[in-house]
Amino acid sequence: MSTRGKVLITGAGGQLGRELLARVPTEWAVVACTSRDLDISDRAAVERVLTAVRPSAVINTAAFTRVDDAERESSRAFAVNAEGAGNVAWGSRQSGARLIQVSTDFVFDGKQGHPYAPEDPPCPLGVYGRTKLAGEELIREHTGGTALIVRTAWVYAAQGHNFVRTMLRLMRDRESVDVVADQVGTPTWARSLARALWVAVGRSDLNGVLHWTDAGVASWYDFAVAIQEEAQAIGLLERPANVRAIRTQDYRTAAPRPPYSVLDKSAGWAALGGPPPHWRANLRLMLRELNHE
Image: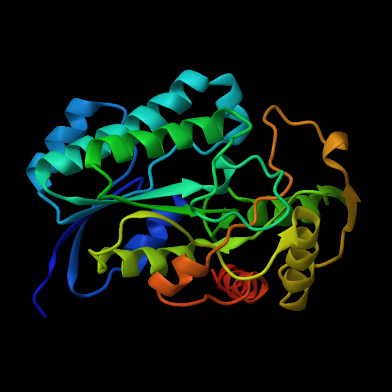
């Protein structure tokens, strides 16, 4: 089968980037750049890569995602999440490539009592959310609104640093684990998001902002309990730990978290392949994969 063109994936060494690389549709050729291959905060480097590759589309997954570290390293977070995203947008426009940008639920403050729609006004609480929102704004400025921004939440995978892997480690090492119960969102398997993004690559008519996560809602505590139950069921954990629900005020972090960051995915699901499975079903699949590594 002949290819439809080339897709450049930035941040290809991250958990989402790796899932994208593992599920490339046969009609696309891919050029993958990890953060070592391409620092998107370097505009000249971005221009060189885009000029050399001449992709039909760019999926920008490169980001400074360490939420608490962003409070202490705000300059670096801004350089990557805001200026870096702007560089990729500018370079994409110059080379004629369509940009698909991955963004976050952290652009909202979590004070709304119902799911956030793409058109709801953002109001980030911390540096990470502010830098990602600034990136969105630069993308719109540099592409004239032709880019597609996909916001997601609570992403995890079998590889990389994420909540699931952290919980498994703590549950093996400790008799009890404290987990916040008053922050609510939706866990999202990176593979589920990767599939949606590949649909987006094939939909050149899509632009603006869409939301995508797996189905369902959970607190971090709910998520942790499910991780333990599913992991024990397949022998990934030998013994249960005591998972204790605590309040946000009892677990101090450098960065504030939105208490409610559930996204309204109705438009995103309709455009990007339909509703995905419930988050717990995808968690079960991911843990089975981890168990067979």
